[in-house]
Image 1: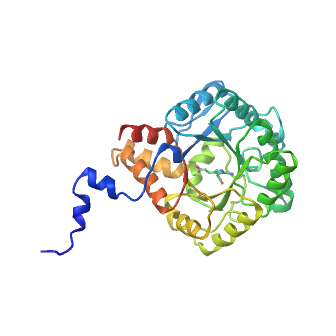
Image 2: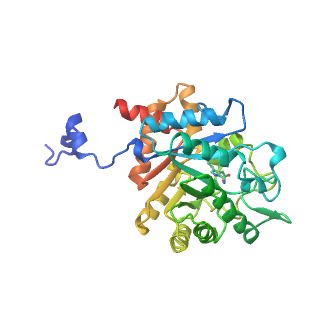
Image 3: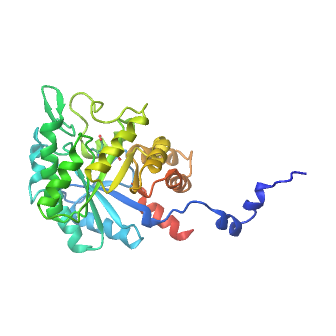
Length: 324
Ligand code: PBG
């Protein structure tokens, strides 16, 4: 007979609950949403259940999330082609789509945490996160534009600005610009460790924001690397980031763990569009149970060390957690 029986700690639901090491709740989740001029909703084929929403539907969806205990949304604008240019100047327009969306949300749902993305790609006719000069993504031409974009978003009422562009030095520039404009309480969620990943495919469909030429490998990280993320973490800490993001999520669980271990800052993980699409596609084929695999994915991200999880499944997960 075995002396030691680990199975005793799994004997029934009560015991399993007592010894469970990781908790997942709706309070850990952020719901990313796509907004367009409208009217109505424009479904996103590769992300079943998600659509580009007009302002009215955006408020409705956000209210649904908030009522289920999901405290935050992250907004991404889908702009008409005519508004895009090489320097993404529409991002600074105080009455532009994103700024109006933030205002609509903060006036209807003041307690909702509104997170805005700071990067050029939805606004750029080149589809890159930075300014393209002679085929290169120019870091230092881009950073001042990002700082202005962050201030425009904060002025509209954003609680958290989230630079997702991976330009060097942008967190410091954004912090300085926000403080100068009086937005000392606006947080920065830095996409600190963002990989050049194929898992962003459905997102680029959602915004029609794929690069027109080339790829993002000169600014996003090489999926082969983990040591390199420690350097990004140190820099973002010095530059004043409030949260550190790792992205994508599950394939990079070891990276989440590495960041968790070297930093005291809250760590966010982004369960990205491709991860969500994989679960949906398998479920549609009857190959996997979406509900179960979604909750398992999110729990694993928490176990890896994420405090906060951005997921397109936030509403579905919150509903399931309420039932459980
Ligand atoms: C772009 C941005 C991307 C995502 C968030 N912000 C895509 C990219 O870098 O090409 C991806 C999100 C997802 O796939 O869910 N600044």
